[in-house]
Image (cartoon, rainbow, N blue to C red; front, side, top):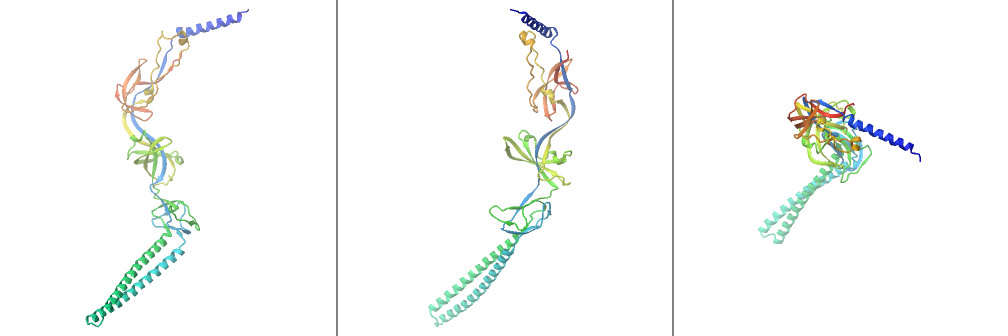
Length: 398
């Protein structure tokens, strides 16, 4: 059997093993190059980002309490209206007829009162005459009782007639009120956002009256409603300043301020948020209801703070393996080296960073303050401006 090729393969593998051993043991373990950034002093602004929509400060839906046919529509989209201004009018023919009928019934009821009053006066005279005659023994007791009964009936008829006048008056007022409601008017000063009615359309009033118009109050002052994450809501308070952007004007930031934060939470797809309402000035009328906006709320501002990059808090030196540990294969094919997992930058927490001194990393204990996501304030510890904190490391060229 020929073994020449097998022998040469074995010789090749042995040569590769010797070369690897020389690389690991003879060429040294290599050096590490540290990436550093200096500790600085500067101003730190902490912001909370939230998204939402622009809305009018007040929006009123105008409906009709009556059923009928729309005769006229006086306004359209974007029309400026004042409180009490007529927006639309229903057909009033039936309503006017009802008012006329109610007035006639009221007049008849008042006439009935006059007739009943005359009857009472007449029956009162008869009763007084019967009493006088009875006192002179010229009229019997039965005649006197009959006169008294007729008088009482006349008084009752007068009271009934007066009550009928009250009923007729109420019916007239109701008919006149319905006639006034046929004029659909604006309850506020503002701008018409939507119009959902046309002349000739039939309006059917029911338990839920149909919305005919939506009117927004003065659009020069609007509000932005954003959803603040539950992790950030503790930092957001009324009165804080903010700025926001909209897609329509991507290169411009608009100022705003927090009016209040609602206590009630909202859960969307398992995410808990709280609604914050911001006041915005729209004197230029660039912003429109319904626009999506991204707001940056300034929750903290620190002047002349000692700052380190957040990458320094996430850095930890690679654990060095002892030279005598591990098998030859492990050293020839070393396992990947892992860094410690990143931790969130929590305010007021004791942390540590690594400072490069004389070419070697030295651990320094610090106390962290506020963070803007890129830099963190240092409130305690032995760091000075200019100290090189390590943010990363790379393998040096051999």
